[in-house]
Image (cartoon, rainbow over all chains, first blue to last red; front, side):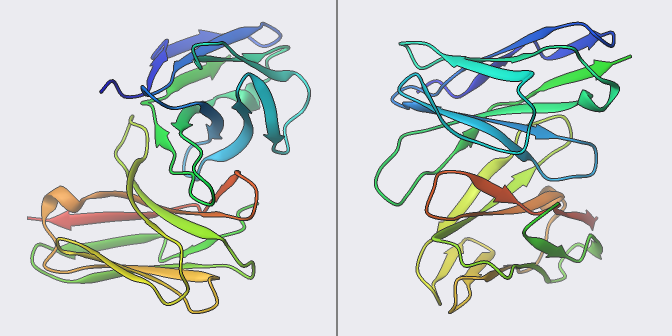
Length: 114
Length: 110
């Protein structure tokens, strides 16, 4: 069974640029969630995709957007990068089963905005 | 803003000692999960608790969900250096969004 993978591992961008991060979900999972983790903090929920539709969004501006593909892999796009966007971006996949939604995380993408 | 408050923020103990990490909230959760995260890696799921008052054991780790489903604790018996890491609790309401605490950094000295 293949776990959750993310690419790239590290990325450096300058303020104002755009970035795309990628996530491949674990085999058999149909749901992908994205989180932002600043240094010394717990992950903050950005949004979740279920069967290619956005299904819930956290307190992030519209310049954070995403996609989910038919194979359940996903992308996170961030436009007009700001210095505060520097963080570890985590993707988690899960297979929805009633009240239980156990999310399994990838290793993350470390984004640095200069 | 973290809906879940974790305490203590940092914990440093000697190998063989016991430790307890707490996770508290004013919100009721339908389920709560505990994760361990090592530097530069993603969180690894340890356990999910669903029922108020539930106790789950995973080798030397004991997890408890409060009766009112607002709080939880993680107890480690005879800690080992391999237990070192950031312990995160995450609660879920009736939607699928996980709300995380800020974490407790545990260091076990050999």
